[in-house]
Length: 204
Image: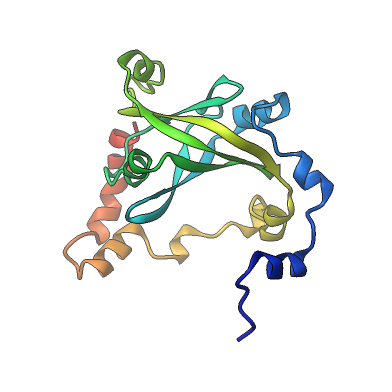
């Protein structure tokens, strides 16, 4: 096992100084190029922290689902889910969040770090309705830092390459996983068979 890094000085000795482009790309507001990336994204992961630890949760909707309110503020609808509300619990206790936006076919990603709050104004919720169903809340993020990430990670992973796509049937299904962790009390083939219809009724 290699030597353990325990100080920032040791870390910087190994990695050196960041390249100039990686520093100048960081802003404290949404510049027009970053506006375009947010508008094109149908998916993000939101990371949060709270008394019970860390959480990172996926969010997705048609492109532009994250609303740009002004150059410092984003609104993100909290769509129907499993009611664990891990992200929301964390935000109530600690407003710090980080967002990672992905755009299909594009290897640059966009990172946002900021402070979040949960809004429930009826008019605001109604403005985010999909299929006639508003979200239960909206996450408002005030931006501290925003910057794009270069292509290397997605290029190395070949995430968008059609020939790297994994056949779903080669991995355990949701029903399989639930049946395993519950010793057969939940999940199984019946769970998987009912899922497509359940998805139609509960996606919004």
